[in-house]
Image (cartoon, rainbow, N blue to C red; front, side, top):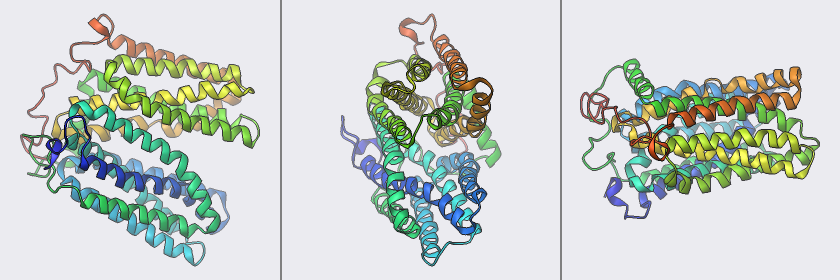
Length: 430
C-alpha cells in the first residue's frame, strides 16, 4: 500500500527505510567523492587553483539545480525522478572512475563531473523531502527528519575518512565505490511503490500541466514570504550558515597543531550527530519558533565559550554544543515546513528555503578571514555572537505574548489558505 497508509502507527514503514537506506548509501559515497574531486583536479595540472575550480563547480551545480529541483519534485512522479537522478550519478561516477584509472583525467572532465554531481545531489534533496512526507505519518515526521539529519552527520564524518583511505590506494577507487553507492540507491528506490501519492485524498504528482517554470518558482517563494515562521526560518538559516561556514573554519584553523585541529573537527561531527539524535524529541515538545530561538541562543552562548576556553581541552565542549544546536534547528524548520506547506508546493518551498539560506554562505570564509585579520579571533567571535543573539531575540519575538510561547498555529501560518490556488495538485497541476 502506498503513502502513509502503508506505515503502521508508531512505525516509519518499509517505504521510509528503503528510501533512507538507499539515499544513505549515496550520501556516504558522495561525501567521499567531495574530497577526492579537488585532489584529482590538482593532480591533473599541479595548480592549486584547479582544486578550487573543482569545489566551485560542485557548488555551482548545487545552486543552479536547487530551485528547478523544487519544481520537478512537485510536478514529476517522485519514484521515477529518484531512479533517474541516482542512475545519472552512477553513470557520471563510473565514467570518472574509468578516466581516472589510466592516470589523471583532464580538468574539464573533473569540472563537468563535479557540476553534474552537485546538480544531482541538489535535485535529490527536495524529492526526498516530499517522499518522506508522503510515506511517514505526521506524528512520526520529527523522528524521520531526525534520522535524515543523523545520516548527514555520519556521512560528513565517515565519508571523508573512507575517501581519504581509498584515495591513498587510487582515486579511481573513490569514484567506483561512490558509483556503487548510487547503484545501491537505485535498487532501493526500485522497490518503492509506484505512483506514490502525498497522503490519502491528495492528487498524484505529475497529474496535469502547470504554470511556467518561472511562475511556479515564484509561487513557492511567495508562499515562504506569506508565512512569518518560514520567513524567519530563511533568515535564521542564512545567518547560521554564514557563521558555521565562515567563523568556525577560522576558529579551527587557529586551533594549534594537527592533533588539536583533528580533535576540534571531531567535536563538530560528534556534536552534530548528538543534536540530530536529540532533535526528534525536542521537536515534539517545543513550539517551532521558540525551539529555533532557543537553539540559536545556544549557538550564541557557545561561541564566546569556545574562545574563553581556547587552548584547553574543555574548548571542545562549547564547540560541540554549538554544532549540536544546528540539527535541532534544521529538524524544527523541516518538520514545520512539511506540515504547513500545501502538497503541491512541498518541493518548491523546500528548495526555496534551501536556496535562500545558502545564498550568503559562500561569503562566510572570506568575511570571517577579513574580520579576524582586522579585529582578531576574539573580537570576530564576539561580533558573530552578538549577531546570533540578535537573531535569537527576533525568534523569541515571533512568539512573544502568546500562550505557551506560540500562536495557536505555532508557525504563524494560520491565515495561509490550506488548499486552493496555492496547490497546483488541485487547480492547474504543476
